[in-house]
Amino acid sequence: QVQLVESGGGLVQPGGSLRLSCAASGFILDHYSMGWLRQVPGKEREGIALITASSGNTYYDDSVKGRFTISRDNAKKMVYLQMDGLNAEETAVYYCARLSGAAWWKDDEYDAWGQGTQVTVSS
View 1 (tube, rainbow, N blue to C red):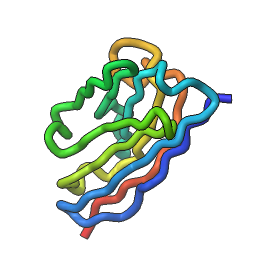
View 2: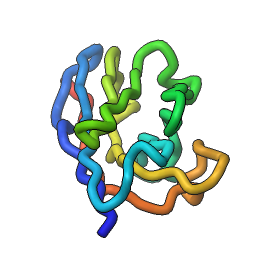
View 3: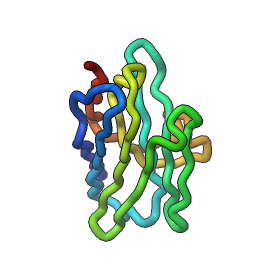
View 4: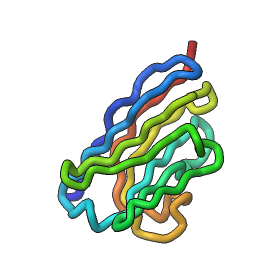
């Protein structure tokens, strides 16, 4: 069955970096665009980065552009999110998800989700 498993979350100081990983199984990763979304406490889940299936084009929410980098390794069936310059407002649960629609920034455009990984930015 389709499975996405995130890892790499944790506690980081403001200004620090983390690299999140997402292991995909049960489907052909090459065929799908993949996104990272996050949910800040008390707010809706939102898409922050997308990497397309074929060309590997990347798209970012303005709030993370220039600091976050999404990448994929189809041979290893992995998707990554490198996060630099983290700030406290980015404390959230981060999710890897498989895109099924067009509006990648909306969480209802995804049809498969990981369990999420907690990222806490605090001194």
